[in-house]
Amino acid sequence: MHRMAGIARCVAQGSLEVLAGSRPLQQLSRWLDPENYERLQLRANLVRCINGSRTAGAGPSCALRQVVVRSARVCRIDDGVFEASVVAYDQKRVRAVALRIERRRGTWRVTALEIG
Image 1: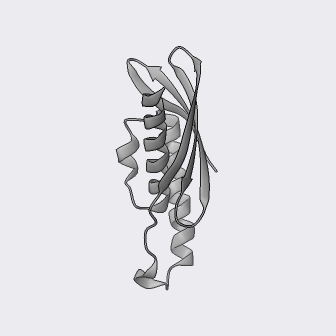
Image 2: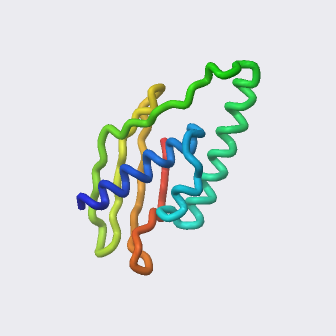
């Protein structure tokens, strides 16, 4: 359980940092299955487009936000299947992240990722 909480915390923090633009998405490729990797990439691109249009004349005053994980809860569903919820704070708002972590071919992968 402790290892799953660590994975959930790292993936949630990394995902929020990708959305904030302070971490490259490729760093999460080891943990995310292809479908969730593509979904996070699409969302990051959309956030970048929206933020780019808002801050076009803002200059360098737009600082990258630091993400702090406040808590992580893990529940065992079955052998090799866990679900987790993570609460994180990004200096602007509190975010919730839900994950499903499954053991596939000997490695742990996030097969569901929902960011609120």
